[in-house]
Image 1: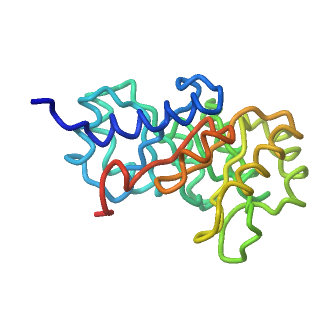
Image 2: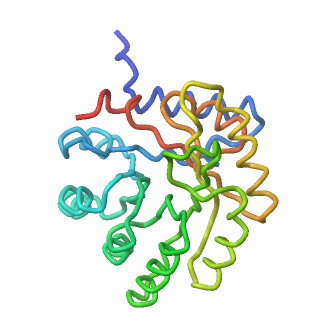
Length: 220
């Protein structure tokens, strides 16, 4: 009998299908497996299956969990997808290969200095508060041009925009708005879409989807 598809294979298949519907190449979409709160033993099956791009929410958790895994799998790419405190900028630059949550001038200053000191330029997404929600991180739409200019001045390589749409309502308009903002500013990558809406995000141009619970189950 055929073995049931793994969650990883299922998600990859759904990404590929959504990409094809949108006339895009499936390989144009990077699956970032959000492994926050999940232990190394939960991550091991994905590594064994060949997946190499993972996302963590917190610097300290990544520092405690990933050194041994990266020793075994040195080609792993680790993305920071959670809010970053300015006083953790130096550790983040040392630990991560991409940062998805650049969202304010003080963090631009801290990351710029940390990258200069480390001699390491970590690609960043600017997080936009796409639904203008008071409780969420991300720069406002009005602040975006100035923040992008400040990041450029600080030598931070901004590669795209990131968002987390408001919960409980249709995500598509917010994804479409983020895509328009990115295009308006000459940015070509979009970090958008999570377990419940990544197919919609792919059809609207996502280049990076951040999938956790659909891969790992409920958080540990």
